[in-house]
Length: 455
Ligand code: F0G
Image 1 (tube, helix red, strand yellow):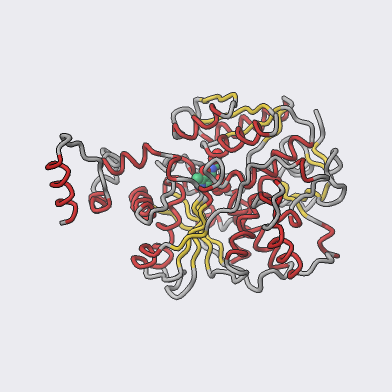
Image 2: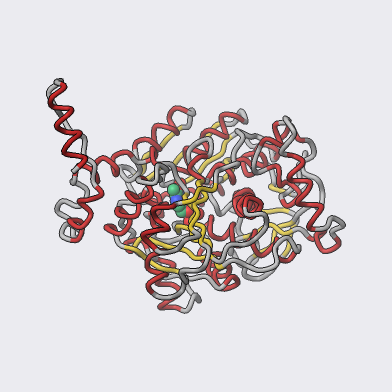
């Protein structure tokens, strides 16, 4: 089984090392399960040579802008364009890229009006090649999987990681193994994995069960694990923050709000913010806040009931299936970055998620349910006074609207909450529903419908 070493072929020696987040042990190589050889906790990637970095903040910024004029594959990637802050590869053509990143930062004028926060923006990671933020991490981790000589990559997933992994494995000439909870992920995500050629196993368990099994599997079989436990994934996902800050001309917003599931993304964004702050690219830290679904609120409970000292796992249940996770792997990393940036952690109900999703849809943007927790969470943080109306806020929309059409159809048809505890509260959302209308194919019928819609 090839070792995951910083000295693997194609990896520039000493550009980075692995550090345990708990005991601080630093090593040039990592075991198959990306856990510390001494204490078993998660690893993160660090860059010892940054201490004697010769580039100034201004030089980094202008290098990244100049690369936008280039037509080379690595510069066209919105992730590898920032490669100065990523694990280095020997030659540019080693990167497995689908031109990920480069996602838009949209204004949300209607949501700005309804929430009373005039400076409200959405960074739409759902416009990545496979429709979710996972691509930014996957381009880096898949590249290092191939450099380490692996033929097989594998992940446990609520759908988006598997879609992304399958695509990048296919592009990189590797085979992929997907473990997903049976009946608990959306068809459109599942269909992506199938089309990109993954061996897809629907396991009779939940996401947490899939991840547990994967962690055992990687110790027994020569497969490279591409979950966000893999620290290369988080390095790629860091670039979301770099691209966002560049789009804001390096003027940090007051708040960045992200959904929380397995907590890799919040950890990655937080790591990026702390790194670029230390390197002098930004002069102050935005507050990074994480929002979870009430039914999958492990981090909320961990922070409230255990002071962030030990994980409180939950039996996860939510229609936002992407974040239906009860035992988040990266909880310690996320707790650290929330603390370091002064962010908050909140939970929102199923009805609040559905409302926020419809409101983001009505902006002509749309997102999947898990992404909508950000807007629902913002409303709560405003009520609590944690976010002030004059402050600037960026919501990170993690997945594309088309990722979960069943949720959207059930919402607009009025079926989403039938027979659930949210049924009564959801009546308030009727105004947002736009069910399809079946008509006889006559001009009269269509004109009448148009007139009714105008009223
Ligand atoms: N939003 C979407 C659309 C997701 O797919 C996920 C996670 C999250 C938010 C939460 O991000 O786990 O980094 O805290 N999806 C994973 C998957 C777990 O398997 O696709 P996180």
